[in-house]
Length: 130
Image (cartoon, rainbow, N blue to C red; front, side, top):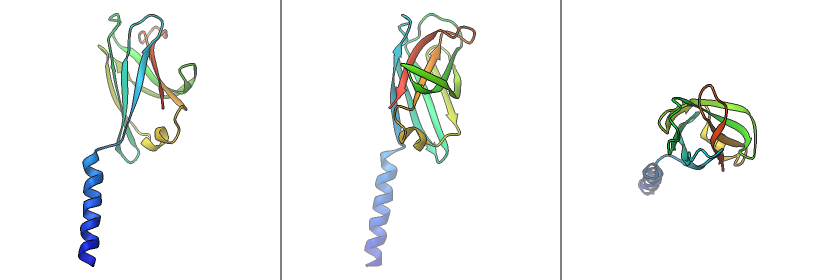
């Protein structure tokens, strides 16, 4: 009986591992006629760490574009919750010291926002984390 229980436990853990890390995909929508659409993916890296990867269709080349996770929604952004690495040529990746469960258990509480540049806060893309 112990062998069977052990085999079941090993099979269960293997099945969970085979599924890979949990993710949340965020649809990024262009704002202010920027044509910067795409997606952001939040990935559970480990307990206490979430990776945010942004992939946008690049708009006008403005160099580095500031990006943040804000409280609220795209319709009503609150303050900056976490700063992200700048978006360059439509791409950005950053590991945050935030547990993935914070985003998973609070759909609609946060949004990802990208600005025209580091010097121009005009919004060019935004997506609600659902």
